[in-house]
Image (cartoon, rainbow, N blue to C red; front, top):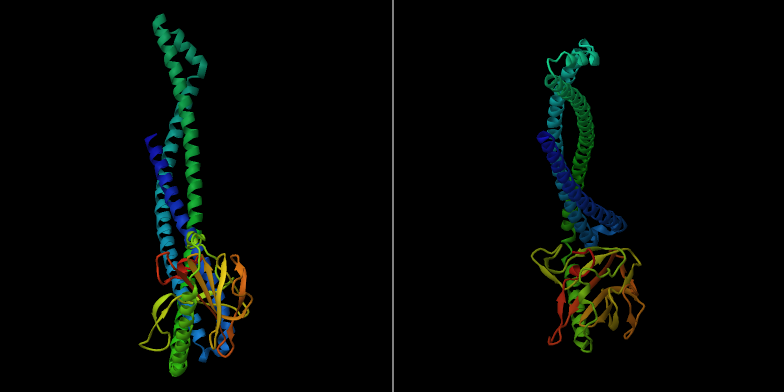
Length: 400
């Protein structure tokens, strides 16, 4: 009984570790699918702008995003490989222990069968019930006859228990053999999965190295055109000035819109897209030694992509900047969302929109094949003079 309890505890420990492994594997698989989906989408964007890549900063930013995703995918592959290798080792050790246990159980079963066979043979030699009757009758007195009757009953019970023990041992042995077969099948599958992941890792490393080489070659070409990128920085400053004006005019607003309670759950301002420039201070992609501050995020997307409101609100201001495109500022109580880089605008100041309603269509700069939306979120507290900027990635669903 003690040995069986120990076996059960080991089995449950195996189940628990398998359950934990399964949960981790499921989470990794989900994350991996998300990254692979974004890699496929980014690959599609790169293919569409490949013709202009030699003069396109946009292509380079999308390529950077692709490399980041590939690095993330590689990390997940490494974790999956590590987990599977550990699982394979545990399964191999479990198989060895189970095989040893089966061998001992088999020997014990053979011993039980041998003992039982001897018992049955002895019973046969004594001619069964007839011999038992003579054994009782030949007793010297009634007390001895009674004791012999009890003895025979105990002996019969003992034989029955032996038979039951043999049946029980056979069932336990069959169960262990079935479990062993399952674990061996699992080992084969996990070993095949590990091999596949190793191949995926090799292919991913090759792809990343190729993309990094392409990136460096492209930077070398683009860095020769500093004047162009310095002009783009000036256009960005013009955009920031326009945004400051827009926010300065936004003095009338109401609190309690519910915007704040949706942090991390807001819909994206585009149905599809990848963040190619993140929020905050960062090095310029091409110009060495120059840092830029992004007050929002830049999202690369497809041509003619529809720009939509991220929350219920009112159109507060619109503008146009040459080289940048049209822009819209929306008010959501104490929060403001800003959309810049639009080709068409389908709303006017004062319009009230619901979340996901169309604002316009994103601009495509054909010369570079650049299709990007600049998106910002600002907040102004009741006693605050100026609005403060927020990281939009922390507000959009699955963006951070």
